[in-house]
Length: 121
Image 1 (cartoon, rainbow, N blue to C red):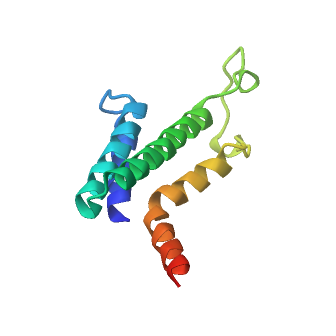
Image 2: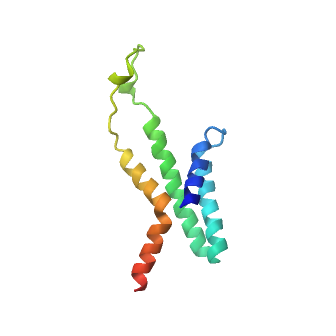
Image 3: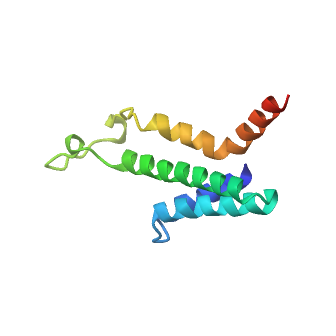
């Protein structure tokens, strides 16, 4: 789980280092595949996990970029200045898949081990 946090920091810091965040998300998936390949010695399982984690990381980056983008109705023609307390935060639908992807990325191994324990009984 700690490794997942470290890899997510890699994805977040990619934009500051002038690397594509989507490239960092694919790197996240590749690193997870390599880690699983080393420990399980099963290339099919490792590549499946790598593709799954890479896809989740790409989705995570996509929804983060959608949240940061302002809609045309939110951009005024003439800039207005207001106090910090007067700005309202609107709940966007992108928060729901973002939270789900975060939970799956960080706690994915826990859910996998839990499902394996339940099915082995």
